[in-house]
Length: 434
Image (cartoon, rainbow, N blue to C red; front, side, top):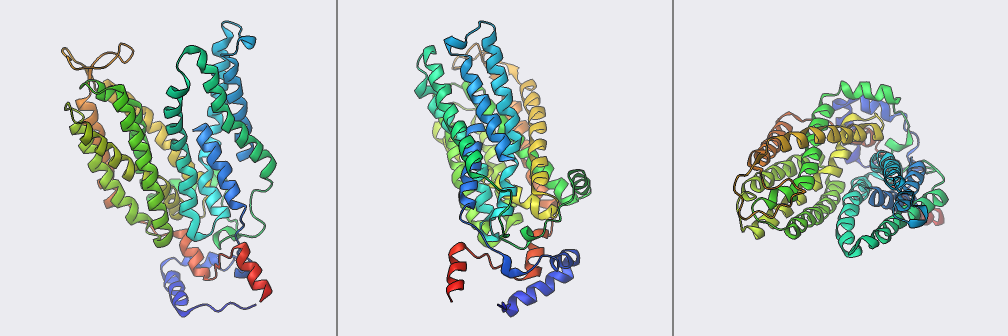
């Protein structure tokens, strides 16, 4: 069956050949467009990745590491396994196994979206899988106080948290049988031309747009890590309760999930990756500045709650889109390599920013309204630290807006091929009957 290509698509392909000749040349090797198809079981794979990401905050290995680690942690509080000094060892070993599983699953959303989902669903699939991790953290923060009223309730909490890990392991082991679908969902997925891991790293190190993206969003991840980790300590110095700090953190995450969902749908329709991330990053920096200022005043609960909500709404929204943009500007480097390096960069910068923020604090001589506990180190003046974070966020936003420009290499390849039909199982069935 021959497929007629509209003249508008042909003209777009011709213009892209002039702009990105290398991508257009590569597109000729992508195979017959009639082979493009998507499968309903892609949603099952997405659900498994989400469950693992949510629980944990290569799917099969990750699933087993996550499950075994979660079960071993329970041994530390069960009397039958209690060996005195070994209790801490159980907890440490279990936590380490779960931590080993995290990189395996955190790098999976972008690759899963590329291999199993068509062009118009990739950003949404990446968003769903990526945002399941902060959703898991939110659930844990809300569920833990409800489950643990006394020390004897800790085994119940660990048992409940082991449930999703066990379920994800069963689903991954029984239900995941193939790395890629029998037929590709898009032109870029139909031709595996990714370089080796080392070769991909070399290409990324020579890719200026990618390096700018990795630095800016790696620093953004670092700032979000500091915000969530230090929020309670920053607010308690000016008399805000732990409950309010927890509420602010919850609003930060919930509004972030909403923002990521809406932006993912928008970008899937428009492919405006660069414009969306630039606008959201600028709005995030404004929210960060507002937080740095308002957090130094007392009795501003409504303003702080609003600022935290906006900070999360715009900040979280950029993360999954940035992961997709990393693939677009670095194609044909493997999706796991390009998105994984940004995640690692964020963790390294997170340690640096965290240490710097804590070292910039000063002991408050008088803090009559402080609600800080002895464990938190008493009342600290976080003014310089929060201003430093706001300044860093503003610099990142300005630098990214001015310096980042890129072609969408993966989309250019697919558009140049001009025959991605994105058929669903139902579409194929109807076509066969006709």
